[in-house]
Length: 196
Ligand code: FE2
Image (cartoon, rainbow, N blue to C red; front, side):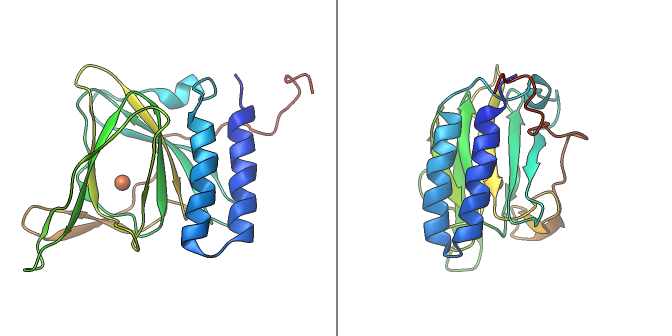
């Protein structure tokens, strides 16, 4: 298993969140690093790429010790989709394998949450952003009904612990904390087999 790209990404994002507090600057920097990470598909451990027959999976790949960011592999089974939801922290989505479709939502004049703008289709290598300052509510689905898709997500906090919201058609919302699907994370730090 080649964990070098993921380790490099974690180091790069750690440097970025340490150096920058301005969100637009930080998002621009992390976006570049994420684009580099998802430009290749040879590093994600197989166990953290497994779909579930019923539910989409969110596997933790790395959580910053100070909970300034987290990295997740988001694994879609065929035809799976999220409810309409928000994040409450910034997030970047990099498409690794397959494709997904994200529909942004916003409030209309009556305060109802409605689809806003065109749905965005992500293909391998593409990166999208969400945050409370640029648009934080969306519904996302696997673009395919017959195969797995995987995107790599980076969030501006420990997303497995962040209190956020899912939204119903009638405009009501319910709190949720997404947690993580895995009970182990990649060992980025054993470099004995890398020959370096
Ligand atoms: Fe999302």
